[in-house]
Image 1: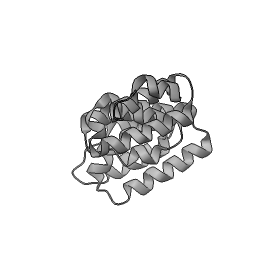
Image 2: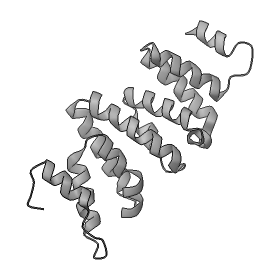
Image 3: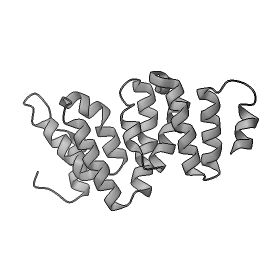
Image 4: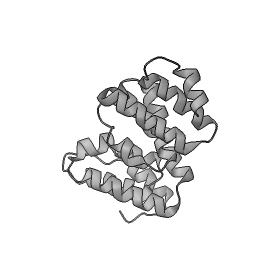
Amino acid sequence: VSALQTAIVGARTETAEADFEIAAQLDSWHMLPEAAQFAGRAANLAGAELFKDTGNAEIYSNIMARARRMDAVLSRLGSYPAADRQVVPSAGKIVAETYTPEEKARFEQTLIQQAAPLDRTTRDANLLPLAVSAGLADLEARWRLDSMAEPAEPLDQQFVTLQSRRALYGE
């Protein structure tokens, strides 16, 4: 790890870009704890501008998702919608494919807590795509049904399709 850091950073000042490069390389070598450490350092250096660069945002979110630190990713969502559209599907896919049922249940509870103070529009724009890509069908159905409860909202065809796939025709 120190040899990689020396090769990339050298005698220069440590930058977010350099730390993301190190994190990505460590992740490709399946050295997840070290990759998460460098991704966290890079995120601290980048600050609020982290998701401005979609490439770095994706490196960060994928490493943190694999490290089971989705709370760190959730706290960064919403600032840059373009980055969110790229980050959410890949991080959600990691949740769907690698998390255990218990970890998915904890993640679902985290999403519910994050959504509690938000209005429906903000929740549906920021958190619903993550629930969808993470394969949290019950939460997706609940939120879509909740959104359709508004008198002005039309029937959500994605809700109908989801419930049909799940063979739940009562709602």
